[in-house]
Length: 117
Image (cartoon, rainbow, N blue to C red; front, side):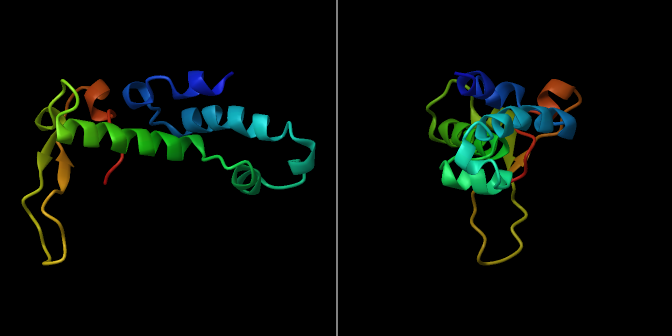
């Protein structure tokens, strides 16, 4: 019942401070402790046995999905509004679809898609 609330609009409000990430992760940690058979295991083992991902991994996946939707044109937001193509390709084995975040002054835009790919 809680998980949809933790995932709601993740790509828009994804936390960028470590303390906020840990606070959200504690909710799932607490949930995994509810299973008596798994209590003695550590958090990673409990997640693996329940076939769950950490919330950070879920946020990363959601961000990548949103970027793909922008790239393919499935959203109203154009990929060129948030990213620019990286033209500095250094090796022959690198692909040509590298993206780079545009510079930003505002915190809202700076931490939107704050991970690097």
